Image (cartoon, rainbow, N blue to C red; front, side, top):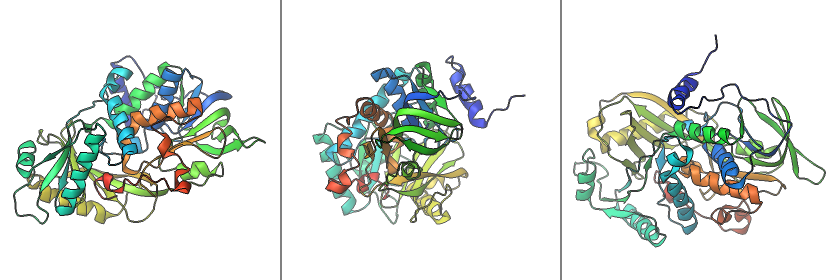
Length: 417
């Protein structure tokens, strides 16, 4: 009798009614491809889809050492927003938001995108000054963002403890109404189905063990647990493992990896209309369509590949949530998990070419990975197809760290990562 994982059964349930059955038995790899994408998460699958749909490159293999969407794509808090401070970041993330708005139609698959709004709370004078600066910078870049008073916040999110006696009172907040959430696994399945329909091979349980280079230094093949696969171009989109994979081509990356934790509560009736984020007390919360409260915590203080993280991180986060929303104090948590985020020195991603001809990289998203998924895949596909960076991706090149052209978005993470 054939066995399916829980994820496979869910995927069949969500995807079957739309006429597609996922390829749980991965296809045998061909001897050669025009492009090999390493990593079958949201960014990797999006890259393959846009390469095929917009650039006509269909002889593509997406290699995944585990299962489709089993990494950070399946371990995040699903927040979507573009209220970043610097021009370069605003352009990149707003490009993603615009693609999110039509993604279900583009993929013919319901990714459950919900523009319910993202509200960032201010608890002190520094927060007020910082977030108002973001509001003004966003408006100059054509990105929606507005300032709310405490009274307006209480009316918008009645569950928040705005006027109670708390250690960190709510003094205002910045609201991006176009921000919101989507269903993370549906995003992976939607891109996978659409890419598969265009002829892309998605090969699971296929771990890359080496990147082979020719006499001229350019990439020529990858060695995998399922044999050698030749490729003219290789794109690395392997969150949490980028440094390891790039090391196979002797490219050292300016990345550190940290566990980033989150929790999900038991389901309750709808009570939370938007995503609420707080930098000062270090927590963020939203409610899923199933009724669960999705709670985001912070990164551990030490580099690690652990998917659990320190218990004190989640304890602090739950304390903060109980202060922000006292009505949920008696609720029980169903599960706790951690994803591995790659962080660059300036907390902005790396997208583009590398010193190795034919090798491209997309990494270092930190806490911004999920929200950028369609925009990241779109500009990375352009970069791979044409061999030159997309204009939106150009500022995020690897060589900016040598030139000192940093895009320091540390504050825009909104939960002090």
